[in-house]
Image 1 (tube, one colour):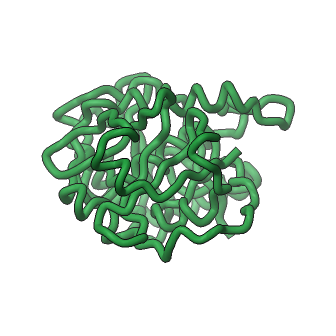
Image 2: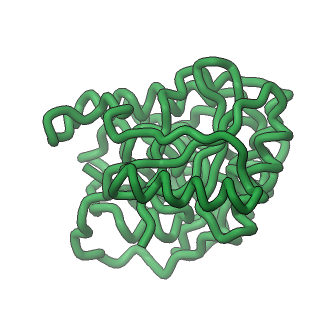
Image 3: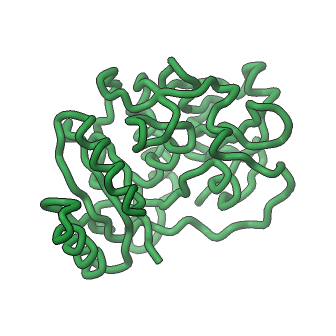
Length: 263
């Protein structure tokens, strides 16, 4: 059983057009093709997301394409991998999560012997400053989620996810932001919808996820990160970029399905 990925502190995820890391199907097709949802019926309270444990980090590339290729290579081996741009301005790749440093090192060394990776670094749970003394600082965590998401504003979106197509789909965006802050959010919007705790719109707080049926009916096909003041950040459609939108706009108001919290 594998755990979640652990990031170093990816502070600078800047709007780089060259970072061709996000593009999409029109919001009408949104992330729906990958993340179809049953309906908006009440969902029993789900257990909290697991914290990130020990994660393997590889690569430090100045060219995003190299990180993309390595991520895809790892995924072909059945590994849960993703790439990101960290504070150094270099693109890095992380994969898998483990409960112990020894387990992470054993896996990394095995991959190294098989020629899939070169040098590696084990990211420790202590890398996540949002957790202290075994307890979550909810307010601090929410602010960190919004700050991390905001660093992606302006990055072009491409359908296909955070790794396969050098970009994010809507749920890939939310997943990476959460994982970079120490919580193992699932990949698809369907999974994100199911594992979250159902909250009323009036209970929304920064960092909660908001879900929409952009393809009609009551199927989840889009997700964004609530940032306060009735606004949310999301990866909208092909040709667009990570951006802020309003829950009060007619388009999203009429397609809103609900919200989920993970704290």
